[in-house]
Image (tube, rainbow, N blue to C red; front, side):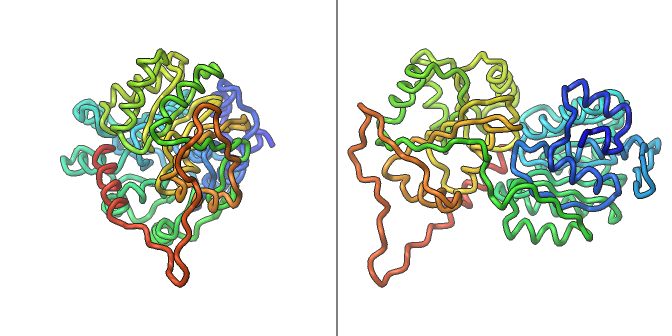
Length: 420
């Protein structure tokens, strides 16, 4: 199938062609006809499958009131200045990425768009809102700021998109989302896109979506199929030296490195930079200008390494990223899926390398259970671990200990605040 067979307008086909695309991905083939027909949609697609274009293209089509069949129900184009489409996303990076897609694919439509998120001044956003826009991309926290100041009118929204809904739930945004939805018109089209659908997210879908079409192009919590997974066992205090050795031995030039904490990301970035590896850190405590500059330099090849927290596990679209390194394994196994989804995108192969210390053996076991397979493990000569990596078994007759919940709750609250 070609994009020209989906009934998209000449303006959209021209913009698609300018990006070098001719063939839609499976999620685009399945989702676009439902959205053009005005149906609610629940879409499950792993990251890197083209799901942003899967909702951006038909939304642009409907906004320009161009349709190609009797089942289409284009949005009515009126002269008000309030947005007619609202796209909610969990992070600033994803907001910027979605806005870029809207502007690239809508280059020949004359439609106006804006992304609002925290970390930058609110006044320029207010000025643009006053001039009027058609599509608003927003993080929940900053959108609530605008609603509190009455600088945005959501009464004309005809399409709501919840992108990365599971991540918004994980980051504690679900209550904010419900507050925002209360401000929207009752009659509207609702689209929910996500890489995974936890039980709580499905519950939200049941309350928001009305008789939705279902699109699923990957099994639940599926990793990128073209990603090679490997583990190197190493002691925690040897990880930094081992990572430097790998950069030197293999001549790595573009590596996304994940740490659990902001402090750990900064410390590792400093170590790499001091050792001659061009590096920047990316996390929620960085200013938006610093985050944007670091990401731009990394994409342009000016940096060999970008050290990030899980804020970068969603919303970063980097062409042909060859490698992701888990300097520390995530506490939540599903986050491993999102991390490695930064590589192996759009049909390209990729590598996911994890440096695993003895205190992470339970996290590794949980990830392997999620993947339904063991990850090949090795030891690097000169960095042999001195601590036991075997997973402790519970004593006979005793159930396994439950993981404490408070640590997860604390992480959720902090992440929500830093991504407003």
